[in-house]
Image (cartoon, rainbow, N blue to C red; front, side, top):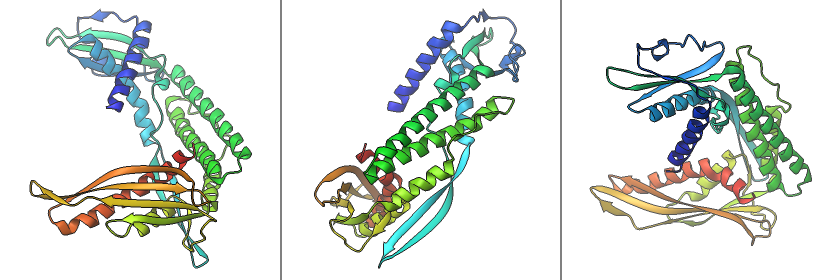
Length: 343
């Protein structure tokens, strides 16, 4: 529901801006060339363009602007980068580190700012079915300036995070600053790639920070945090191993030697309800709780809970499927949850 609301707000904003700038006059004659192909008045080398159609004029304009924004969304999704997962574990005094690479696409960027200056250029209504067709355009120079403005903002926020980092004494806060700097520069890298496509000259703005170096600093900070894992409540079995694996996948060096009072404690609990059967299926519901406890062993830095459920045709499959759900949830959310605890 929130995403739908944001989409409506975005389209309303774009519609207001574009309509304020629009000088398009509704035509009802023969179909213009842009309905089926590239608009002659707005050639590809100079403009980005998109069309939209609907039974009424205003929805058609909204679709045209939305489709224009999708040009950027597609480019952002196609810019993939290779990232490294570092799995580390400390056992019997020996640390083992395993690295593997994965391809991840950055899709965190907001396209609203990138299409500022877009306008409704032309409108046409079919005399056959009365459908409205709308052409939205954005000057490539304007698009490039929009992207450069976003890149500058990301650089400013990166510099602020790194300045904060130098003032920190707390390892958790350092990790938070480095993670934010990495995320900002990853977004910037995506914009740089997009700019080279939008700007026909193929030029961008070289990055001041090396993304690989920032990532290595983050991985080092993660490994430097003294961390133990513990399963406080485990109604399905196997939670301790799942938690340790998720912490290692997030980049933390997990110490299982039991040095109480010398490390942060990452505690997990899984409280399950009684299984029940409904409509021929067996169901199991549970609450997963994650807590980060400070080095004093008492102070709760933060906690997060998730409701989980598993279904199966056989009751014997419920616990394995619940363990799979817990494993997936922790590997997806553990790092972001810990970062959220210290903000």
